Length: 112
Image 1: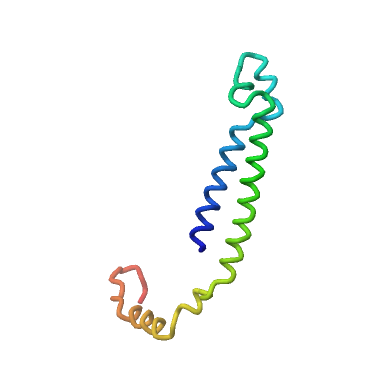
Image 2: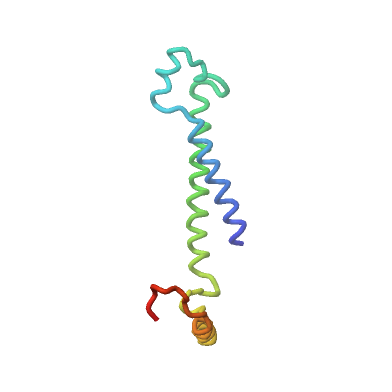
């Protein structure tokens, strides 16, 4: 379930990024006056803003919903993992034994 929501989340994020980059800003009309003829290309002058802004709003809503869903799913997992709880007493004894077995330093300037 979490994997599906994550995939939808990534697709919505890339859709928002793509749509925001494709939209014209407020100053795009001035650039179109000086020779850039891209202002009325595919959807017409006002058709692209309506379509793009609606599509962006839909992708933002999907992104928001999947963000909340992922937060909920991660906080309500069955296993609550902790680094402190993951170390068992047998593992700590193994680490202490391994530290004792390390050969002493042979460097002359290191006090022993």
